[in-house]
Image 1: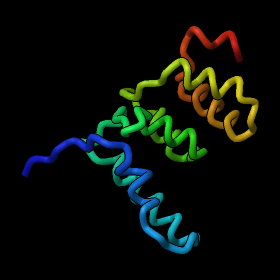
Image 2 (image 1 turned 90 degrees about the vertical axis):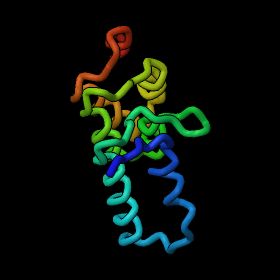
Image 3 (image 1 turned 180 degrees about the vertical axis):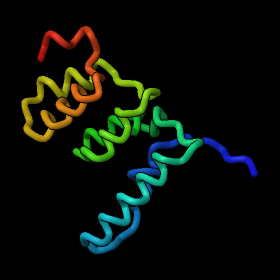
Image 4 (image 1 turned 30 degrees about the vertical axis):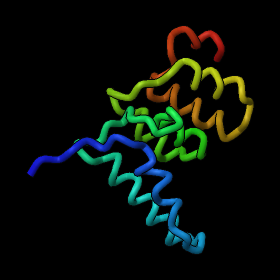
Length: 117
């Protein structure tokens, strides 16, 4: 049996939002399990973009999903864009500074931006 690579990041975040379910802890846990199933799938392209040209990492950052951001940035094949990191650094928002801390931990701060920290 051959697997086809997942080509849309909507499969992770957007598709799960289509369901109209009460926002309970159980539902949030289910969504998180589904997200990590996608991320851990052998054929999943972690740099895939959605129709808005956003990567999975960019969407995870927008949604303040620290768990997903950490899962992605610890991977060697993840593309980190200077503009994304720059926006996080200058945002000054506490939740975004936690993401910057993760980027530092996994040594994903681009060389050109290290002077901003």
